[in-house]
Image 1 (cartoon, rainbow, N blue to C red):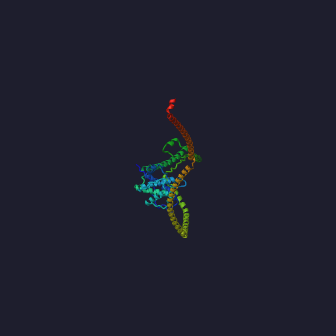
Image 2 (image 1 turned 90 degrees about the horizontal axis):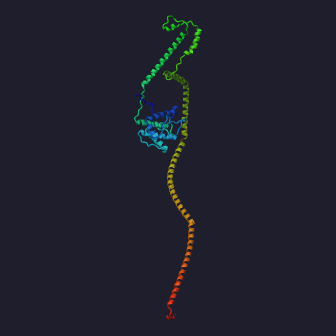
Image 3 (image 1 turned 90 degrees about the vertical axis):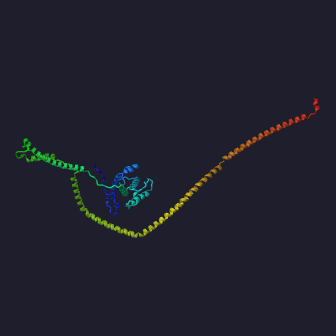
Length: 416
């Protein structure tokens, strides 16, 4: 069974980003770091522990590398950066709460950098560089955390185990190619000899079949005709051998050619480079001296600026204290305003009920109706009184008549 190992460059050193000693290829270093980071994440099984858990797509080879020729999505890249960074910190053996999508970016970046400093990482850049979600510093932070996670899991790089059988097959193929080339040369020689024998008219068929001629062969053909026949059949006798680009001899020749070209070019450009180095050195000295002069001239302005900064911090502190009191008073004012609105609403309800004339109209109508009923009642009372008076008078007249009837003398009664 053939073992398969991933061969990676050495881990990134913390002091790799010197500002003055970086070459022109440093701008593309983050692409290399990103590819190494992706291999380390695969070794840490980030597909199952991060992508499957959050339902995310796999990262591309240069996902966190920033370039003007690559599409970017700062919000998505920053969220992915925080998720992977928190996972790597936990994998490195330190508890770290996973940030959410709506958390404060400044606080999240500060927490990640504090953990990186705790691991011994060098942080010589402002935290705002990480808020873009891509770039050299993002790749550096994730790569450093991935190294700590691999150390926590006791992972070590081993030498690749190259299969020996394939190498033997390649060597056999190269030997076959050499044999084939030699065979082609031999066949070309045979073809030339056969063509020569064919063009000789005095050479009989029996002589061609015999393996050992008895006499020395001689040609009696005209030299001009021979040259014409050679020119006619020469294109047919040419054998074209295709160059195999996988042949190591061609690679060695190309390496020697490139080496000679580099040497010749270096001789021409070394003088220009030395001159350019001297000019750059002089320019740097001038810039350094000018910087010192400017610093000396602006020293008092720097002191004024520092004092203004201290005063500004004191004013901000006073503002924070005052804003706290204003907030409390604003809350009390809101409560009083709410109570005042309730009182106004009650007063408006009472005023609307007092100014409404509908109850008064109803009272007047009721009084009118009551007066009419009183009049009708008085009439009925008068009728009843009159009826009672008549009844009394009639009863009185009846009683008087009865009294008169009882007081009549007896003689009068006898007369009748």
